Amino acid sequence: MAQSIAHSAPGDADFSRMAVVLFSIAQVAAAGMQGLGIGTPIGEQSDAVRTLVTPAGWGFSIWGALYVGAFAFAIYQALPAQRDNRFLEGLRWPAAGGFLGNALWAAYVQLFDLNIVSVAIILVSLGSMLLAFRRIAAWQGRLSVGDRWCAVVSLSALAAWLTAATIVNVAASLRFHGVEADAAAAPLISAGVIVAGGIIAGLALARSNGSLPYALVFLWALAAIFAAGGQASRWVALATVVAAFATLGGVVIGLRGEGHVRRFRNGP
Image (cartoon, rainbow, N blue to C red; front, side, top):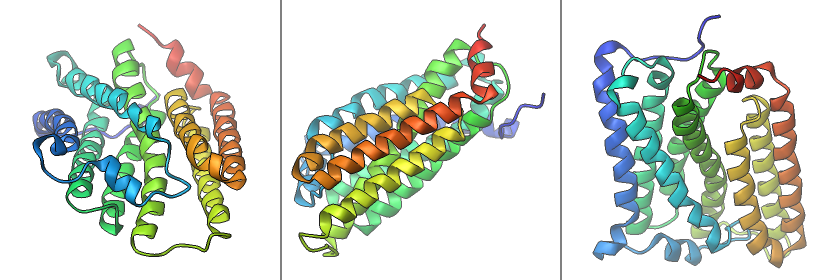
């Protein structure tokens, strides 16, 4: 059966491999700018425009694991043995775009704020990672253990977190620009945003063979939202539960696809 994933031209391979490595480092370096006395910490910027959709602080600790996963992918895809790996070829540029977007977003937020520009940047990052996620789901060939752990798990997890982070960033940006609902309507609007995010995640999972890394990270984000906004509003709490069920429903539907079973049985 034909392998369903895009691949780079031979002359493009070395450049794309280097870009993945450089941008995986750049996203971590940009996030630590305040350590050099440059800008305002991202956490402080987020707290200044906190909404009912903003996750509890502990939720953001997942960035440590996401950065490790990004480094794992960057190192793995750059190994000489993976030069001709067509599965990785189709993932390099989307991953590089996502990593670069993360670096630009972190730098911009620390220097300026969570506003319409930061939303535009994170949408580009999300689009890049969802492209990688889609290509992973479309792959019909054999996957090695390294492919599954360093590429599938790492990139799917980052795509899931950016899905949730985009929703949070949009809500924070609206508040920054003074587009706020009154006290009575805000919980309902926040709940609607969360449910919409859950539906998006569920559809993505249903169409991608029920990716467990994506599902677990998105559920982590929902738990962090429940721990913050869910304690302030019963509507937000209910919305996180509904979104969680939508996510789990997507996993169940996706896992029934033959592609998932074939992929994870085709080990070395």
